[in-house]
Length: 554
Image (cartoon, rainbow, N blue to C red; front, side, top):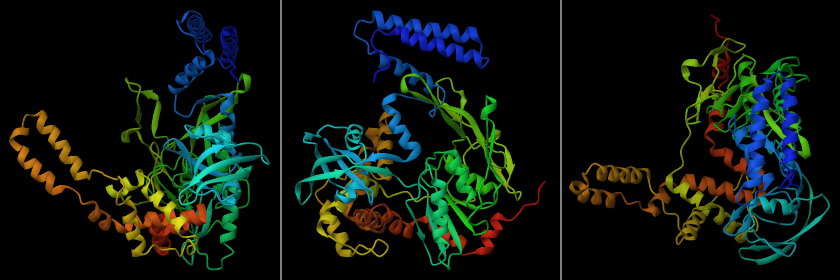
């Protein structure tokens, strides 16, 4: 529904007047607010009336609102009526549909990741399948967003797809939609005989219960001695669920996080409310640059309480809290209302949106302004830049050829080919590619485009451009060409040189075709550097305890 009909400027004016009333109730300067809202309404009215072409009043207002909020921070957003369902999914993890991830491939939409136990997987839709038609209508040219809307619907309703599958041609699939609940904990299990692992990928409803249940299940193994909680790549979600997750590992009545905002209602203290599962089992939290918001409440809170060792890389640094407020015509605004503080009192917000540079860009909090705080046991931690891990693990960059194979989707395509060729494989944790498989992969990509520049070649190209700018090119041209020829990469040699890395990624991609999301962890954890570091530390009790040992307070 377009809530601003063409020519209905009076509706916008009415909304603006209502806003004025709202602002006066919070003590904001009445004259400044009313003056600027009046100017805004005047501009809107004049453009709508006199602009040379027809103006879509709704789109114009939406653009104005979006740009206004964009000047505040990236998390304060206007949610139109048509976007409410997508927003609800991000908060609840629930929707009615077929249960699969999709992406654009050339002019069509491709299935990339069917969820185990849901309609797409039950109907034997596979990663790599191309959707040609939906309910008899061509899917050519549809965006992922358009296709998502077509595939979603009320649980119990049916949708018929025509797909194209390599090796089988065109197939008709009729699926019955279900309520899809994407799990917060897609996998938990044992990484060694004594070390358990819980993967937490989101913070929607029941995230705390899912972590609770995962730990309870792990503890049924009498050999369990320690646990790894993985929040890498987790962008966050519901604050209360973060508190509930910390509560799994710490006693009832402990402060986990507090919030402070402009209005009194934003000032809150969140304490654990339930009985924990285990307050003593050695615990490690894995983080990376994409661990944000609620992930940082969990990792920062457990670190401040000296309840866990944090391993990996520094987290994102989002220390802001958002709440949604209803607006007129079925719309909402998600607005930053407070900053949050971990138990030590630090705010880990990394970017200062309140002080923008002249060009509008936002700077990080400088090191000189970062403050020191103390954990429960007296260890030093700092604000203003995410959660710094107790044990930093240097990340291995992928080889240039591997990045090219990923970007060209050749690893994905070979897994599709492999799935069609072999109906069954060994269990995910036992599956291994052979030398013959790797040779088959090299044959598969032999005539495909995956050209790339090595870092050395990129530097050489940069050197050439600099030499031309500074008028040295003619003098060094011959030497440059000879060096370039000598450096010309041999793709076959690069494949063999990076064989282990490529096989590692191929193994995970292929295993997912048979065993879905859980295969990503059962195969990928074996070569995971962060997990290896965690296992090493948890296998050395004295070293683990030394990291968490109380420090003498100054």
